[in-house]
Length: 332
Ligand SMILES: C[S@@+](CC[C@H](N)C(=O)[O-])C[C@H]1O[C@@H](n2cnc3c(N)ncnc32)[C@H](O)[C@@H]1O
Ligand SMILES: *[C@@H]1O[C@H](CO)[C@@H](O)[C@H](O)[C@H]1NC(C)=O
Ligand SMILES: *[C@@H]1O[C@H](CO)[C@@H](O)[C@H](O)[C@H]1NC(C)=O
Image 1 (cartoon, rainbow, N blue to C red):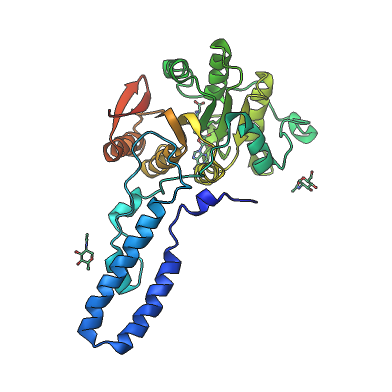
Image 2 (cartoon, protein in one colour):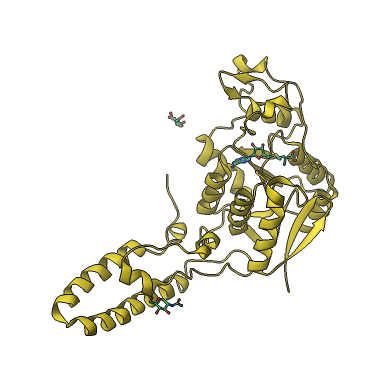
């Protein structure tokens, strides 16, 4: 698969520089007296670090696609690292998710095609759906969700008029199909909704959703979601990206698929929410809005709220609460 050059330059070639630094250091160590060499090396590694940092930030191929302030650049102490020749993690590493995605954004009109090509080998997964051996375990229409029809959806779709919506955490499609209804009502028939979910639910979720059947250990969540999309006549509007949130969001970033509205509603523990929010932020379009569910959920000592608040503090956002949902707006 072809990966864009823009994404490849995301991570500075640390290895490369290190290698050179290493060789250079060896050579120098033999020609200089020890204390002199040490000071000299400090200087050399400092310059190397400076050069690699400034070359990546001045790369004209990279476009920052959001008007939100970019996340802070790596604050790893390269001077220190060159001396010990090992990568040392700091607490701040938790905040490093990379700053830029593909230089060229996929135009909204080509988003669906791109997903079909990249994820489904060019064929719509709705073709010949449902497969005969599965159809008997599906309900014609089985939709349940959480706060899936909250007023926040209409508020944001009216306001942003999104061409591309990315939902992170879809389950049976309740909120996605509510957004389909809204885009139709609000005269936005071309809006595409991408649904990121591994469609596994969580271990034991069928205790609560007894009518979702398992076939040879495979929960039929994706098929039931697709059945719901078919039932709603929304196969041309809704497309799933059926992978873990981290794998899917990183690929969308690499491919240059950006969202105008991105809703985060996958796992609700702090670390999952933190990762999802940071990865979603990278693929948010200028003027777009990042929002999500369950600001008030008690899971993991209010993990979602802690992640949202921390993110807002680090990136200078204002958190707005709308029903059960949180929204992030840049502080002007
Ligand atoms: C709360 S439900 C989403 C509800 C949906 N937004 C609605 O309103 O109907 C959370 C979903 O996130 C998915 N999920 C949780 N962690 C995930 C992960 N790491 N990768 C992909 N999907 C995940 C689960 O499979 C589940 O379907
Ligand atoms: C980086 O590490 C060096 C060597 O340990 C130290 O002298 C310097 O103060 C550090 N700089 C920062 C910004 O932490
Ligand atoms: C992908 O599509 C091509 C062309 O239609 C086909 O030859 C190939 O077998 C498909 N690959 C998979 C993994 O289905």
